[in-house]
Length: 233
Image (tube, rainbow, N blue to C red):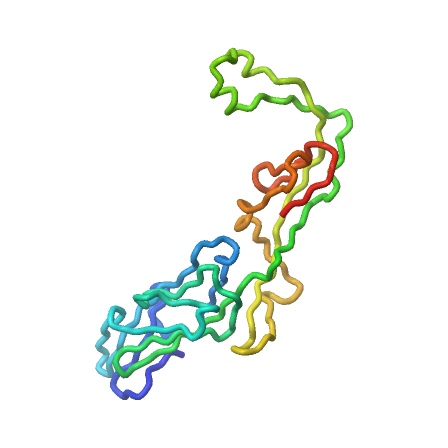
């Protein structure tokens, strides 16, 4: 429970995400490591006197994170956040909010993804499909920008090509944290046998090293173009 120190007539409370109650525990899943997009939790600080008077002191507090490598706090003390530059998680990350002689600790559990991520394909060998050919369509951008091509020619395919199999791409990982500050004991979210599908978070970063051999369609479907070997990363 969040509590005040060294004062009998006033208590300091934290309000996170608009829930008005003493904070028992809060979790942050640090997906910013994967996306680069900040994950934040708004914070409001109020003082409550013994007579029941409630005062919003959010603009007057000072704050400090015990470890910026785990979780950070804004300069105005109005939110705690992670931005992807953190190096690890923690089950007892702590941010202290102070107002005059009062202080209130906010304790957080911060989960971080395990790196490197695990790539999973529905099929790792994409074979030629016998008897299946598909038309080769002209490049739409080239056709649109060219003034010499006839309008009818733009709609006509340029022959046919062989069709290869396709594979669905998934990106998986585990989220973990450390049990206490200063230790390396890892605790895995949902248990050591669970993997979380983070494909939607990282699909824009996927690429095939040799696009002549294969390419990504709709960001998560791997399509073979010709015989050969390539790498997806």
